[in-house]
Image (cartoon, rainbow, N blue to C red; front, side, top):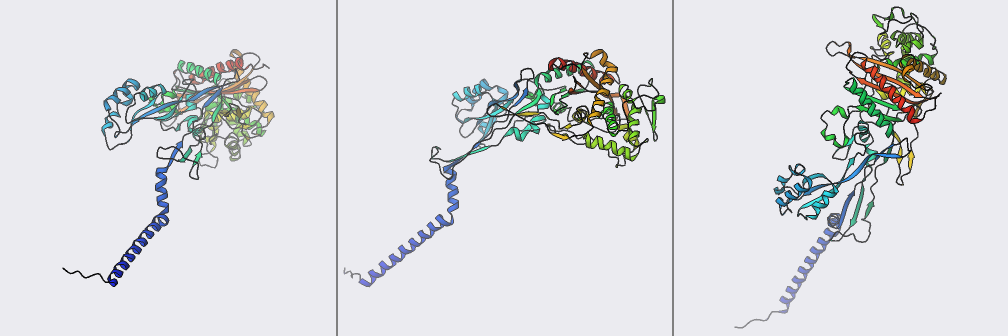
Length: 588
């Protein structure tokens, strides 16, 4: 068979077509590279970073909490951190679920893992918690078993070297690491610190390569180590004394607080009943978490007479020797009759006797004096100025406690702020306050007239363990004049001495105080009743000047109307006597 040779023009055509094909392919590749390298550049950088860059969140250590020890001058730990572990598993990697169950049961206990083990066969999950709060020792034992699919995640929990001491004051930290109640809740941000970030370019083995612009190293900032103004020894004694007296008269609740009236720093703050913050999850009555000193506003009763008298003295409308009408032991305000508990007192008592015998009629007479002789709008305005603006009732003090109550006080401009309401307010009815509000205001009255912000913080412990102290915060000077403050110290001292002080207080020391019995509202009738009362006692102790201001409260004591205030008085006397010995107060 004859084959015709390919003609040169046909060969040239095929080569030309091949060249065009190569050119087209080259253009396609070029466009594709342009699309990948330019248009999709950011996308592929991100994809590369996912495999080349490792990110690790660095968690800070939560700040510790310390108290002071007044006998040694050192600080003692109240709240520390303990390293614990969470045991987890990836069901896809688990080889022997039965062995895992055996090991964890032997090491951590059956209850800790009972709910999680059934999920080990669930292939829809990649992370299953097997046990929480495993100790370091237990974690080491689990690690030695080399259980495929099982891992350990480091965490911390709070531990309390002093047990349940100051539990309501401290609060607790939940399983999510957030502070709840008390100081832990109020100061959560400061105690938590700031998380850090470690980001580095790594090889396939996750080993960091040379430092580049993609590397980030932001160290975690640990939380502040707080040193409280609390004196551990005073706190312990106050809790012991409060419990003993509270159980004696079978109260429902009791609270007590000791403050330095010259700084606003709280030295001790106690509540009964209490709980163990390390076992907060076992508490069934959540009222136990509340701090009665700061959270529970109530009608304070006759302790308010000290502040009413201070207002009248400072306004110059009364003196300690001023007298008032007390015929029959009652007075009438509009259509209401206000009477004293004690009727066998002089017909024209003095202001000193007002406090000594706790005369409601005398407190109302101060309001009349503020109004020029009768209860007027001007007089109510003056009393409101002292109660709301100088003594700062009706607003939180800002003490470092979650859930602090503001209390409530009615303005004279309010339709309810009439003469009867304000007459009742002079002796602590018709308004609500917290113990810390009353004690802070009382401190201003006896310290020369300066209102300090109540605080639990003495300072912060630095990284080198040195202590950086916090300067007391002055809210207002001139609450009352220094000379009237001196008069009030003498009036309150006489009020206690003329009652129980002359028989129970150490001779030569300045111990003053005033009792209070607050009736409560009967929910059935809507009227005040003496069947369930709140007893309290407010006072100070010192030598030539007050060193401690103290308040005690007893709720719904058994044994009669005044059982709570009598026992609060006894608790005050015990702690005052102990403080004189402990602090080495110089007698007058």
